[in-house]
Length: 158
Image (cartoon, rainbow, N blue to C red; front, side, top):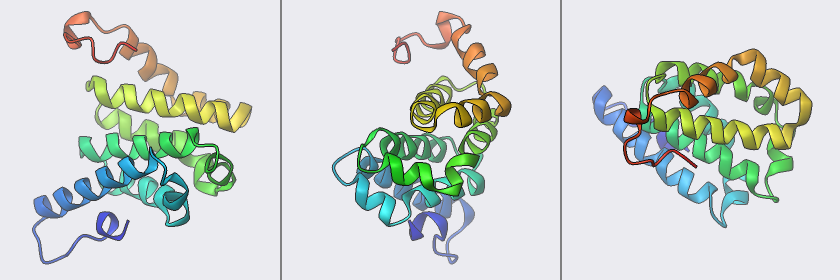
């Protein structure tokens, strides 16, 4: 988590983003497996939330952060702990802000929608209302109405 939030300052900006991207990708693999509880104890949710703000223009970081949150939300041992955190309430707003940076990218929109679906199931009507207010329905609707040429392999039609 520290490498993602505070990469070595002796490196240039591109290398710092590369290190952060790799660290977040590793965390997303851990959060979607048997180590999800370890991720929530060590600040995976905080790191994901902060990295979405710091590296808003980085596509790979956004996708990995969405995967971290989804992994924590679908795991029975971590969903309640994440729901109790204050950053869970701000999650729809942060996610929608990040998606608007990558509005034309089908993979970013798909991962964000998948994560928000899990959040809506765990958070109940409060998170559902926050998700609607943040504008998630707009990007989900626009993603679903894109022509098939935007996804020629059919990878994002689940």
